Image (tube, rainbow, N blue to C red; front, side, top):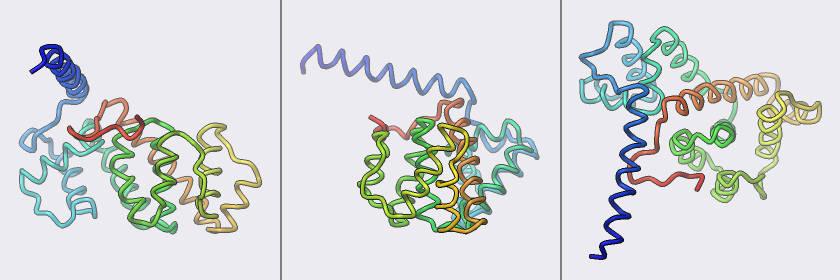
Amino acid sequence: MNVRYVAVAIAAGLLFAASIGQAADRFPVLKPDQLTPEQAKVVQSLMASPRGGGAEPTPENMQKMIARGPFNAYLRSPEVGLQIVKLAEQVRFRSSLPPRINEFAILITARHWNSAYEWYAHAPLALKGGLDPKVAEQLAKNKKPQGMKEEEAAVYDFCTQLHRKHKVTDAAYKRVQALFGDQGVMDLIAVTGLYDLVSMTLNVAEVQVPAGEKSPFK
């Protein structure tokens, strides 16, 4: 085997290990037997939610849940974490917005924050909801997607203005309101704001995409 290739591979492996180590140094992943009663309540709430998928709250399943995305970080402030979990259950699973639109808004937010894990977790859900893969691919490249449906274009403009300018124009507001009503406008604001928080948590915790997965933004 080529010695230079081996050296490069070793260096790459060390760099990857270092990045994981840095992430672990921020919030070392807790184990079920380390949880306080308040922290255990957060995990139990997650297990009972649609995220838990009906899995039994065994130590193994609880460990898998803790290690997912932002949940390990949430446990550092369990009262706050519990409220985030409850809000996420409403915003994710009981929104007035169609899943395709709700998940598209999450992807826009993930791209704004350059949150690779958030994209990794939600891109499959957006595609399952009916989002055109070409739209997702262009958004991942930080481009305004071509070929968006009317509802997607309205949501893209609304969310992009809100992220970049911290407000929206009358035209952007009226377009979303005409499509989804007042509740839809508020639900769009809510999903955007919640996933701002989620993406910030993931970025501070330095949560990486799983080993073997490529960053969606490269």
